[in-house]
Amino acid sequence: MQHKALFYGQNSVILLLNFNSTSKMKNAIVLLVLTAFVGCSKSELSLKAGDPAPDFTLLADDGESISLSSLKGKPVVLYFYPKDFTPGCTKEACAFRDVFSEFQTAGVEVLGVSVDDVASHQKFKSEHNLNFRLLADTEKKVSAAYGVLNAMGFSNRITFLIDRDGNIKRIFKDVKPDEHAAEVLALVKTL
Image (cartoon, rainbow, N blue to C red; front, side, top):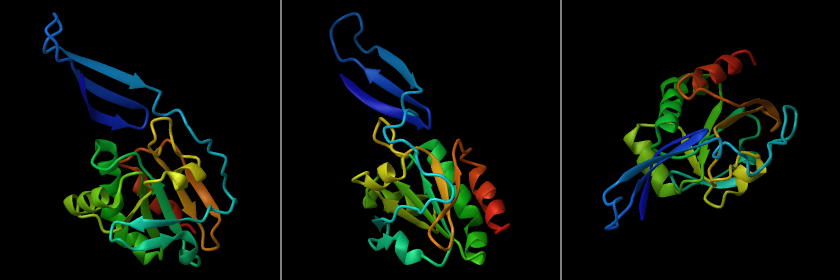
């Protein structure tokens, strides 16, 4: 049996299963929708506004190691997303790209994090002309520390706004990928 994931969203996965057999099901295509399972958290989101943001060091798409502690003194938008090249993740990344200059003007660092590797991030960034860094959490330790790692081993779509002192200012859950960047930017402008 061969299988291929066609779509991955925050709360669903659609798999296309192709059975290769001589039975009546030869060349049959079964569409299986798994809902709610992906949204089930493997790690509990126990962090809350006011907590110190867990420090980390991850490789960015440019091969540079980025530590949260090295960014102390400037606000950080740390947005976790499930997977490069999926529809929702692409919308969200492009939305951040489109308003990135406004984040820069406000002195805010934007970092996208997923469990994809650096090579995937480089291709994703290049294909969509992304102008901010993507961090590779391939060992899934940062996603687990932030409580966003789900049962499928992907990061849930959750964003942390971290203040200049390294504390969590706000946590955005249940985000709409194409509207989220503007929502975060509006809050940043009030700080």
